[in-house]
View 1 (cartoon, rainbow, N blue to C red):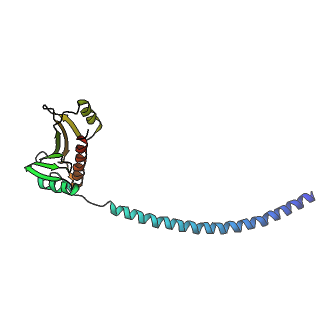
View 2 (cartoon, rainbow, N blue to C red; view 1 turned 135 degrees about the vertical axis):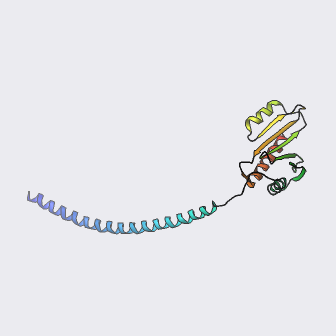
View 3 (cartoon, rainbow, N blue to C red; view 1 turned 90 degrees about the vertical axis):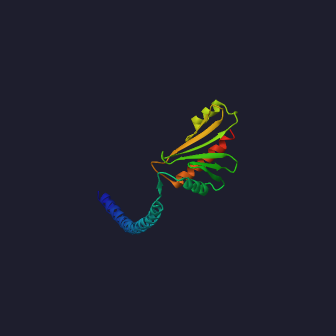
Length: 186
């Protein structure tokens, strides 16, 4: 029993010394950890505020919204977004846009109706109704049809009365031109 008591005392004394070293080490580690955490948090806050402030400035661009376009505005926008085309005002409300491939796109401007219609046609009769139906099922915004003489027409309507930007109109003109170029090779 005495021996057991002596062992417990010596075990406790060894454990106590070891524990004191662990406590000192843990205090130093916690102090170091706290400093590192503070530096890391400060870095994240500074970097995060820099990134956030940059993206906020990029999103504040304002755009002018149009509810109708004059023929000259359409011509200017088309020249700006598609500089390789020839534009001609055939009559009030009807503009011919000739692509660099020689294909014509006609833009019908109904200022009172608040819409723009884009159309083009092909006189060859080699496109089947199956291909036309397939096109109409797969493509958005533009529709194909044959008239009573067998001419192939492509038509796209753009409603502007609710308001669109000139950037959207320029992009729409480019999209119509791409689809019409594609149409002449199907």
